[in-house]
Image 1: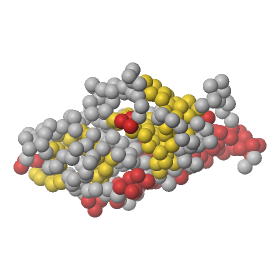
Image 2: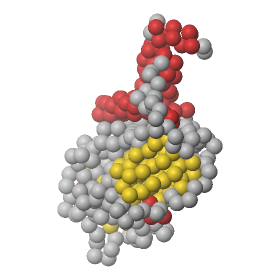
Image 3: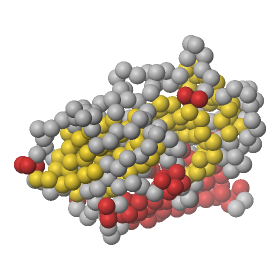
Image 4: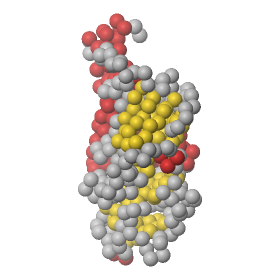
Amino acid sequence: MNDKNVEQRVLDGKAWADFCDALKEAGQLVDSPKAPQDAFNRAEGYRYLTRMLRAGLESFLESDGPDFPVLRCPVHETIKMGADNPDNFYQSAAINPKYDYRISGTRGTVDYLGFGTVINRYSTGGGMKTDGFLDSRDMEIAEDGSLEIIVSQREHPGNWLRMGPETNAINVRQTFQDRRGEIRAEISIERIGAEQERPAPLSAAQLDKALQGVTQFVRNTTGLFEGWAEGFLPTTNEVAPADQAFCQAIGGDPNIYYFHSAWALAEDEALVIEAADIPDCQTWNFVLQNWWMESLDYRYHNVHYNKHTARYEPDGSVRIVVAHQRPPQANWVETAGHRNGTLCWRWIGADRHPPVSARVVKFADL
């Protein structure tokens, strides 16, 4: 499509009308046959679509792309997707493998800091593939906590994060064990050689392309994770090992072994989850989620535990109780008004990956 045709699409409102029509079509994903059909879950589904819309707009319309990347936080308290981890501070930026980039800043004291270059195809329904990975534990960090990483296809001395010929994004995960006591890494990214350049003003072509990218992202990302949630139904109320290759194909951290399942509890029931064998690991994490694979509202409810926050049994094992009301045991995970959804257990940096058991009991029998 030539520039004049694109300008006409913007001038006559066709670009906006197509955007609105595509969003309406994406809303049909909330009606997926296996998704819960009650008003509560339907409301969360539509809110989820608005969150995906906000994430898409920030990524495709407000970002200046790989020429002037910014490490922004795409997933947080009110934008959640794909079994987000409340212990994480997520950052991402668009990059282009024909350029070299520099990441610099301070390490902080956050327990885990990992950098990954990826081929991100969420907007086209293709998931995400990791090209290069760098763990802060393997990096050179100055005594004052400062760090610098070169991101490029060509190997560099020092801290080097590899890009492949199709790399289009960088992801950063900061994982806390204690958010109150740990300090987040403060980092930024810049394209090497662009110090005196400035982004061009928005054009009609950029707007039209961005709006189309947003609706593709909303439709394909929502469909990807809704379909994944449906796949958990056969293991409802279990803590089942996930397909690790698939987890990596959609952007999972190479240091993590994932368990994913669905859960469903009547008002008088509870789910008792037990990890009898805790491996030597950097940390572990359990999160309760809704049907749309969003962590429940951890701002106001206890919906997750990790190696630091959980209370242990005398034999070193861990028992977590998912229930609608407070049980007599420790490690209560609140359902926050939900009666079903999805769940995730992670072994992070573990030397092995023992099973985790789960059983449904009557709350009165706890």
